[in-house]
Amino acid sequence: MWNEFKEFINKGNVVDLAIGVIIGGAFGKIVTSIVDDLVMPPIGKVLAGIDFKALKLVIGTHVEADGKVTEVAIKYGNFIQTAIEFLIIAFVIFLLVKAYNRMRQAAPPPPPTPSEALLTEIRDLLKK
Image (cartoon, rainbow, N blue to C red; front, side, top):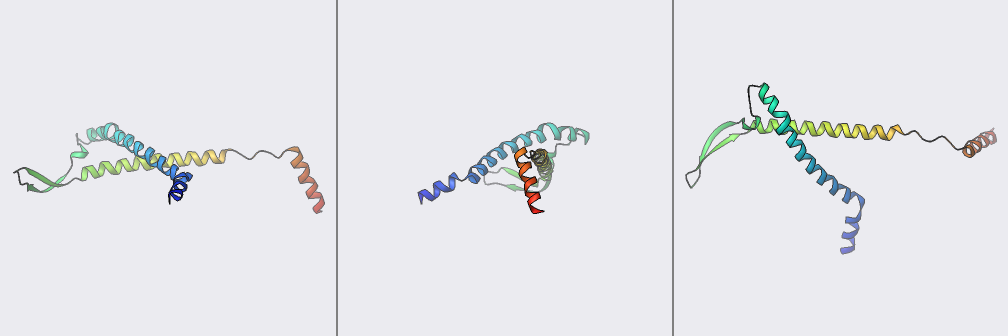
């Protein structure tokens, strides 16, 4: 069982997936910061100073055993913020995949060597 586990861990796909998850988590924090700190404040300013994270629909209150009153609310502003973060992440991934595909197509195959060209010519003559 230990050997099977070592084989599983040593497969390239598992390691690549782990690296992708770690980098994705860090990238998610960067995008969250971009949305929270750079994108949403100007949008809130344009929309009369609205803080999207503060937008909510209070549907009631709840009194806890210690007498503390808490709101029961639908936080739709947080959903709007998360949706914007998702769109930014999806757009950046789209750009990365597009750039990767362009780089893969950019390198044309090298021309045949003189010996390959001569062998191709001989092959074509033999076919006739």
